[in-house]
Length: 345
Ligand code: 5MM
Image 1 (cartoon, rainbow, N blue to C red):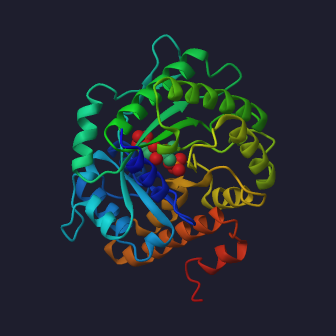
Image 2 (cartoon, helix red, strand yellow; image 1 turned 135 degrees about the vertical axis):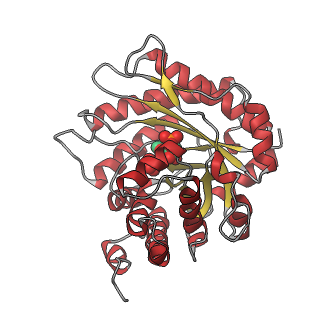
């Protein structure tokens, strides 16, 4: 295992004031988002959209790394450059989603297990050849009064650790993503208890598999009330609960924690990340690895129309900059308004 390479890549992925752009939607997920906006669902349209993202002027100001899907890393930009190379040319580290999606966990109704370990060693070698420096694997944990069960937590934690060890063997930094879902009416306290339980299980497995803490990035959910919970919480309360949970469960040797957005409104995700930087020093870089909370406004503006590309890119970079500011504790409502579409300032 090349410790120096892994540490250097993890540091580059969490560079000061920057975060990660998750643009690794599977074809099915990307098509679902396109269909909702009346955009054609084809490989060419997905390529055009990903080209819009990668070629956005100024993107690297706040984006240190971008996670690609298997389709995109094999495609070229509209200018004929492989996507991973176009990112490198822009000073952005390229990564690849390598889980093969979540399927029903046998014997445990309502719970999922991420699959994709078979043949992963060979796939990682191929992705490294294509220009990937890091990888991502997402485990999905459903939550209600009875879920998650121990079997689901243990199976997903074990798979995440096996994946992470294989990545480090191949010289790729693993993003370890155990996502406790926002769906449901559970309270923030319940989300905190479950998230802490999941993270303890994940780090126990990571240690058991010999994963180098300094050469990985954790991508967790924020600690939030369920979307249908009657008691929603302030950004300050969410920041407090999230940091309390992470301080208990995540070793200080881990260089970076990069949150998923999980279906939060883009402005809320920025406000909550910002609130986590209001207090004194944290042991890890604390940043973002958002998909929807960066992309949604740009996708809605683009709608598949070439004439809308430049405007969509401005909106995309504005959301990236808002999150870059939040990662420094400098995000504000004024900054949000200054970059609103139509604002000529
Ligand atoms: C939780 O999803 C990840 C972060 O996205 P959000 O910030 O929108 O929550 C995201 O990277 C996700 O893993 C990819 O979009 C791939 O998802 P699918 O379901 O297509 O594999």
